[in-house]
Length: 588
Image 1: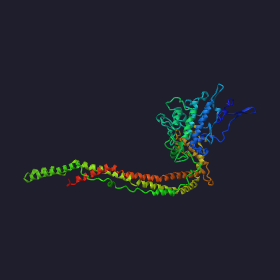
Image 2 (image 1 turned 180 degrees about the vertical axis):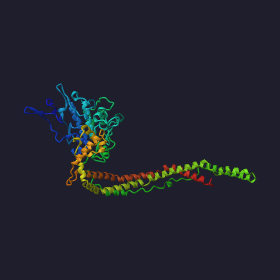
Image 3 (image 1 turned 90 degrees about the vertical axis):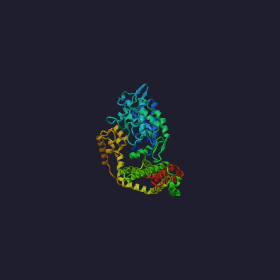
Image 4 (image 1 turned 135 degrees about the vertical axis):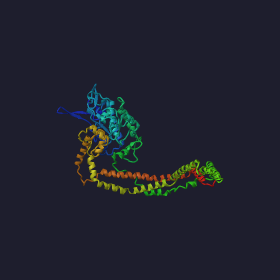
């Protein structure tokens, strides 16, 4: 590498520049120093990012992924293969620039010879090389493509490994390397094929541009696929450049940036579900000091309520309504039966009067004809009940849409919001005072968060299991609990006990110091939260007067459109008239 002067052709790769000897004995190499750069995994793991890269947002992370793809592409152009791509093989600085290190393990061709890469980390090794001895393997760009795609995925998905999830198939839970070997990409939309479920609350492929999602599916394959022709490092560059241009700011939380192709902010969804903060503003949100609350309220109060809706029956006048022909025919049938009943009764009484005692037998059918109701009126009564129910629903709908309820509810809500706005200074003081009362708890949390699982020596918890824990949001001693660990695949009672024992040992080393001021980062969180509320309330109140005007205008339009209820009212009025007509014995 020195002889081929690779360091001159790759500025951000730690290629050796010259050899160093001591007493004619080889001692090492000189290389460029990546000043201020830190391991890449400290950028994409949330707990490290908040301390090591406090100003980094999602746009910064996309650009870091873009720079990483560019550097790996440059290395491949030099006829070199990184081979041992992993989370510690690259450094990133505060500007998002990437420096690839560990060039001594690269595979390199020179003067007809191939110097193989003899090492590799299973979690970044493609399925076709899982379990193979690297001493016999000549690596290719397609192999590098798998490791690069895994790192890019971890950057975009907050440290989640693409093959770390819950196996829903038969048998035991899969290790990450086993899931890679079987092509079980956890975030694949083909879940019936992969039988894998991602950790809870995490982002999904729908949260990123479809071109990026397709590239991940190409890179990671499926259980039924053979060796994939994966996106090369050079192919990732334009994809990530396009993604970078499509990053937007979250309206609910200015610390959040995400792809405009997502239906909603994935970080808001994640933080709400996991109660873990991914991005923290280092300075409170700036807001307009010119906001005139009294002026805004004056405009809101100037808009008068549309008042209650007019009586719907007065709007829908009906003239000359007469009993229906059906009702008239039923009335005639009723009286015909009664007349027939009277006639039969009369005959029976006459027969009894002239001495024919059996005439009383005619009284039974006579009473049936006179008293019993025919089936027709019952149908009219049922129709009246149905029409009455429909009319009541129409009145309720009219009062709701043509009345002042919606307007009054909106106005009352705006006034309550204004009161909340006035109380924000008191709310901020209360929240800051609460920090003082919780000082011991905050110090304990900071102490536990300072102990990373990734750097801890815990019985039976190696790199693969640590990566699985990270994928399920367990990064520090603070995240460890029996409940949270048991929810992670392949963590049974023994491993859970090992982790909880480790947490207890960390807790035992905690010492509370009441003289230490409240953590400034916690104060910033409170002030950022208050500023966020202030900004949100200001936006809502500024929209208040136009919203009320719109509601009022819509209400008046609905009042002018009462004719839609005419058919229902006509049906009810007709049914009511027919009902009364049939009950009245003397009206025809």
